[in-house]
Image (cartoon, rainbow, N blue to C red; front, top):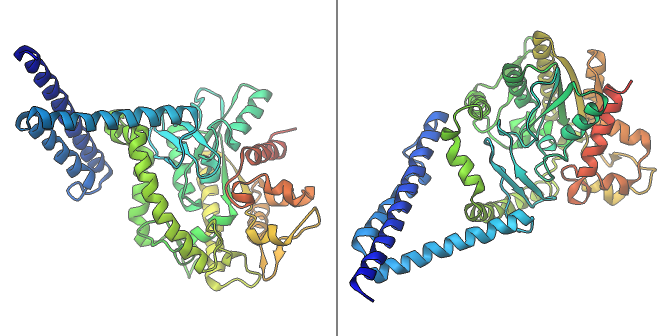
Length: 444
């Protein structure tokens, strides 16, 4: 090999490492800026320091390592790149196992294998939904938790998208905005309603109550997440009015910022977008999360919850004082949602989605079944929510009541949910909910 060839190889390797250093440093800077905008501490962030350390390492490799050592580092980089290309190809075909990512940001990647197989890109505003039709004269904000976000299916196979198709068959003037957030409750729906009005001015709002989780998540005691990590409300003992738990102020502020952040500069959000699309990073993160999830499931099972984290306490026939308080808080949160809609001239509607625990499938069969099992009534909270809605002239669809009225077979009910009937809605379940909502609210 001539000296000229050796010099070319040296320049090629040096340029590769310098480009790698520059990209890593840029990512670290962008991530630091992202944390700063969110109001989070930058100095303790491991990602920032790791990125800068890696950048410095590649600069040292470029100028201080021997050609042989540089070539070894280059082979490692090439192997990582090949792995990423392989994972990207598998993800594109929908055959990549283990990876579960649902980072919320505009155009972020969603890939979910825990239930079903969600595989798509979020829209410009960070929602796992097709592009919003903001020019439609009649817009509906469809708000809820993971049962609305539905990362377990394609973004066109959730109940909000199904409802939009049914409405657009009726008239092109209709549009549904799917505003689903995993890990949220009606306390968060209050914030999403204000957000929806500020940015989209919908004429209607449908708030979906996931009965299996939302009562539990209205109480830090039942939910076992502190108010510094979740939004909780209390009831004023004197007047019974809804008041924010003081310790949840930071959680609410953080949630509000996350909603607004998706409307900001794409450059500021770039670190999250890039991270969501890097399958090597998401594979490593998913394996780490799976390890922690196993321990959390074991803890929930030990304290009486089933494998899907279903807490039966709010459904006791003789509920505890805390369970009663949690349900009252949830109803008060729905009342606050109604006030917001009234203030902005939006029509307010409620949909309740029941949860069918493992005990239901273990003990019930055919069409002659009950949700009153042992000392639990799993339709109890749903009936109370519907009773409040009826007494306050709020249009409501109780999916549990519809299922009960149709005398659906237990196996047919099981097919509406993942996780052997007690998880999130399947595409069939979403279609059933959307059709039921359409028939109840819009078919005349």
